[in-house]
Image (cartoon, rainbow, N blue to C red; front, side, top):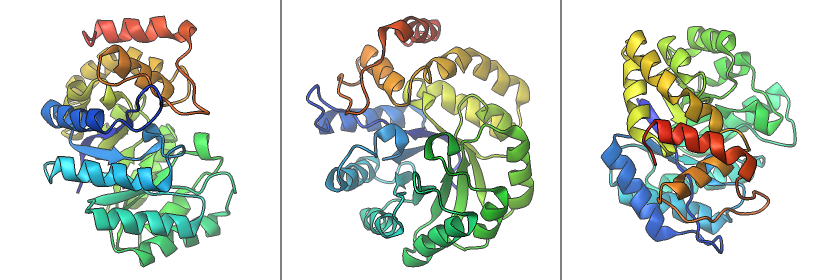
Amino acid sequence: MITGSIVALVTPMTSSTAVDWQTLDKLVAWHLEQGTNAIVAMGTTGESATLDVNEHCEVIRRVVSLVAGQVPVIAGTGANSTKEAIELTDSAKGAGVDACLLVTPYYNKPTQEGLYQHHKAVAEAVEVPQILYNVPGRTACDMSNATVDRLAGIDNIVGIKDATGDMERGAELIAQCADRMTIYSGDDITATQLMLMGAKGNISVTANVAPALLSAMCSAAIAGDEDLAHEINDQLMPLHNSLFLEANPIPVKWALQQMGKIAEGIRLPLTPFSEEFQPPLREAMESLQLL
């Protein structure tokens, strides 16, 4: 079981928006030093929507090679084409990932039966552990708990990243499915609460910027240490909020640039972080001594 603080890793880019491979190496090494428990390569935060297929697969291969088995690597391989999702998942399996993360098909708005058949088809086509990813705020596609419950019966569907931020729904999901799959939070603001309810980790944007604190918070929450988990999360809350003042990963890439971790590159249609939102994010980072 993959547990704890799971960073949804940014893809560093040069000012000309080429993938910055040397900086990627340094970022992975930093996360290993800081206690990050697992790494997602090519998730939403990694700008999977703007990298071409060759870049996408190469980032995954590179991260697996750099990590060298020290922590689990999860590859983002979802697509709104079932055929493409199978191809990306098969490529990631060949690269040696520990699991794949498959977002619900975006834009084309499948039915619940379509979602079931899509994920079932990918699971049956590629024998690698697979984690469902439900983030209706970005995909315009919401996978119901009933559909997750059906998919939990498929052997290599091993978890779900729930990014709804809905605690009532999360509690129901844990009650229904936690005996057959691992529940992860995909929402930094509510992750502590979901883990205290029984989720086993947080696939996190904030972990890009404050990996050690995120790891400590997740460890406390999973262990049931409510006081410590809330204490750490209270410190992190201004950062959580500020990292979503514009669409992810715009703020987090700016934050990492301010820390000297990456260059300024971000690909269209994403644009640099607006000046009006920079002061609250800077203040949150300074309060945690990240600058």
